Image (cartoon, rainbow, N blue to C red; front, side, top):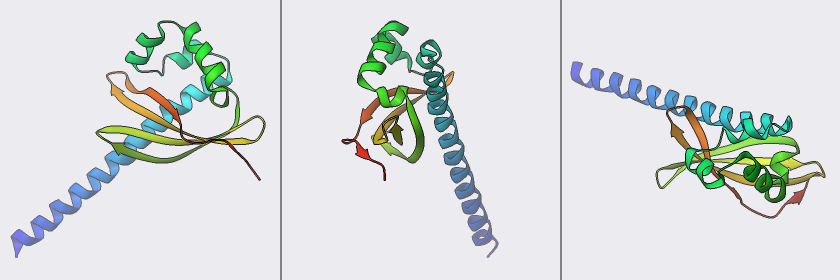
Length: 137
């Protein structure tokens, strides 16, 4: 009987610890993405570039190259009126955060942020546009 009670207790502790860890992880990931959105809002592309993963930084090589890519390819990320965090998923061992963004014209976009954990914290490894924009009602 005592063994069953201890097993149940440790099972509950493990479940709580896992849930708490997942909640903390999601908060950290959202904080990283929010930080980049705030940097974009201030036209601080150097600050925004700091939220990119080391691999992404190597790929773009400079803040100017990163700025060109964002302003031409992802203007809704650079200038927007609303950002909403949807679900965080694990796909093939990677963390993906779905984000809904409304641009200045009222169009809504769904984006998927691939996140990687680095010694400096969570960083953005890639962003994918999930579907065509729709007009908000």
